[in-house]
Length: 284
Ligand SMILES: NC(=O)c1ccc[n+]([C@@H]2O[C@H](COP(=O)([O-])OP(=O)(O)OC[C@H]3O[C@@H](n4cnc5c(N)ncnc54)[C@H](OP(=O)(O)O)[C@@H]3O)[C@@H](O)[C@H]2O)c1
Image (cartoon, rainbow, N blue to C red; front, side):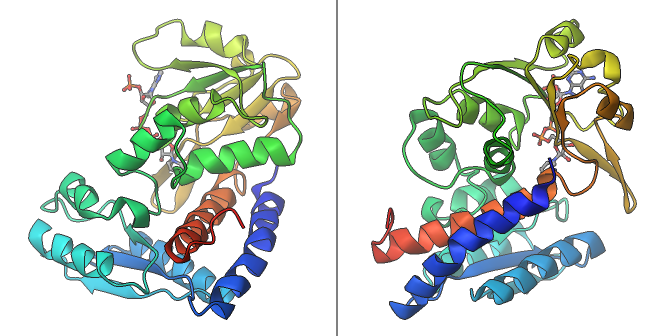
């Protein structure tokens, strides 16, 4: 289950919507805030700005120095909150240790929160109220839907209850919608028998950030495996799912080019939806 074609389908859906917004006099804007000079963070932000340009969105950028305080970052965020040309914003994380990223997140206008991580948006997700949905979980649902993997009524086991993937994905896939509606089990370090659950999964999602944690013996033969958790050692990417799982799984995401491309696609979907809400065209 390569993520590239799924992301392409999302971008193809967004293109006419972006055109319609531009025609209506509102070019969608995704702002980025980078603190310091961490090279991977700068590369990640640069990639998103390039994609914004390719899609015809604006991408105002704020670059704060390495010694920026929490107050400096909040001041930048508040300026973007007040800027009508900015529909969504992303404060690149991680950043310098003196910056309180929880306080920064609280300062973001929830309607411009492109990652869907503001408590108001986590609440919307839990309550089933429309709003920006966390990008990686939304991308995982899109991958399963694209490859027509049945989810409704099936057993999804998620390894990891982190706030970026496991917890929001559990909420998303248990919602009463045709591409969700699953029985969801979340396992974590508090469940020593997590492997027993994993082996029962119709769909196993690895979201722990423990390289090689998922081995073939954890996969039900013919089952579906989604590898989302990764750890970086320098530029080297170390996935949770061991490559030998390919021999056992029926469907599996590749070690590179699986969940990542769809995460970026969902970032732009959240941005365009925020722009549509801002001009009152949401839902067509
Ligand atoms: N592919 C992408 O686009 C993408 C995007 C975002 C994040 N990620 C990756 O996804 C992973 C998860 O991120 P996150 O922020 O959601 O989670 P997180 O905060 O890193 O938490 C990891 C979760 O895995 C569980 N876990 C760790 N070791 C375990 C073990 N040995 N046995 C069972 N459970 C274990 C932890 O359990 P406890 O709660 O008990 O500690 C925790 O719930 C990270 O590797 C991150 O780098 C990937």
